[in-house]
Image (cartoon, rainbow, N blue to C red; front, side, top):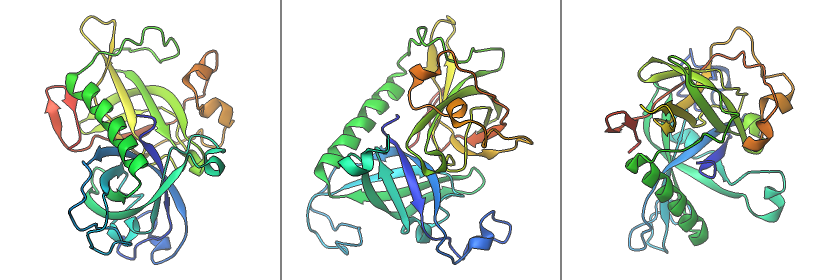
Length: 284
């Protein structure tokens, strides 16, 4: 799941945003902003169909992969903004840019959006065979875990917040302030489907990130992944966004041992579309 999290750099704000939109003052302007997304679906490669990317202009050229990135609707509002969005994959540390590990593609179109839930699905295309095969493999492995409802034995991860009555551990992978990938931990609770509230620390640039939610099973010994809401925003009266970054964000889960974070944020996100079976949500 960590490798499927991507950084979004949006370089255009659509004039179609409404007057009450948070970015209404930026309408029609090229003011860059950052967000986070998650590759939630990868399609099998095709080589005998017209390619929808701008370079191919609808011609049948060579094999390509379609994949969809899920993010917040307030990050990418429509197709106009999607076409001005750069999607950075595998931006894990500062050296990724210089050594070629980070790969960038351009957004193509918005294929599904729900402004009430603040969820957007943006389609992308790549001709890079190594990239296509890699993300296809990553997504297949994650789908296998979700569909088989595999129990995750996390008893050794003593830094996870406890499961109290009505509360559960949450984990967010994001690109705060457009920085390399970070992981934060916190606690969440259901606010009424499809909303989930949590105190997991975030910063500007984290919007659209996947929120990993864990629930204990009936034996109370394991934790199961239930759903993955999209991080939408914060209703905090106080914010940890300007506190010491060492306390807020960490790239490795192991480094959380022995550290404390002032988790005063009251954040929220919304579950995407689709129910796989009772108790397990999945995006289609």
